[in-house]
Length: 251
Image 1 (cartoon, rainbow, N blue to C red):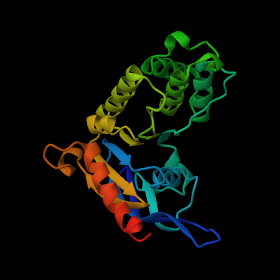
Image 2 (cartoon, rainbow, N blue to C red):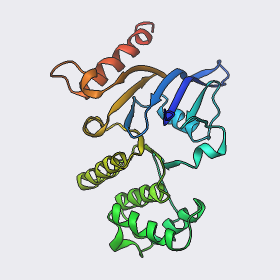
Image 3 (cartoon, rainbow, N blue to C red):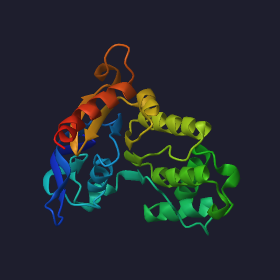
């Protein structure tokens, strides 16, 4: 049996402060099967980006463990199979789009004809072929978002981690990202993405997990989580507000 694409096993992250430790993640147990689109949801401050940073090796867990395809995320080899788009991406704006992708591809070990082919393929995939030889400084915000998505795709990773991938995109751009995410799954790859656009999540995700205050408050198939006639957004609000209620009541 293939290992899970992502596993959080009792994952905890605490940050020290003068008033005592701040709990960012509290005993997360999450498994993401290969070849699935997994939505990682929660209000601001819920711990989503912290969890992603643990997967990427940017942060160390305080307790528990995280793995990618059965490999502990603390090992460098685990990150070789990951493509990542951060929430606020940026690039070297003095480069052209094509130059940026060639640079990213070389960092991932690509060269020669393979690199040329992959650069052209991802430029076409994110609809930037016509702007490929313009400096990124001349790109709109949405175009910069798309070229950053292209650099995450350049090495054909088995796991694509996207943090708010449709931020700054117009409706056409959001449709393009949804198509790319779906195509990635259709080719047997895994997509793990965080988003506040719950309508987007509802359209493409096989499973979702909702965090609140660093804890998992719900996970499962989107249409099975919500009550009959209830949208995912309504369910999200209901469970997040319920999680916050004890803290508010104690003030």
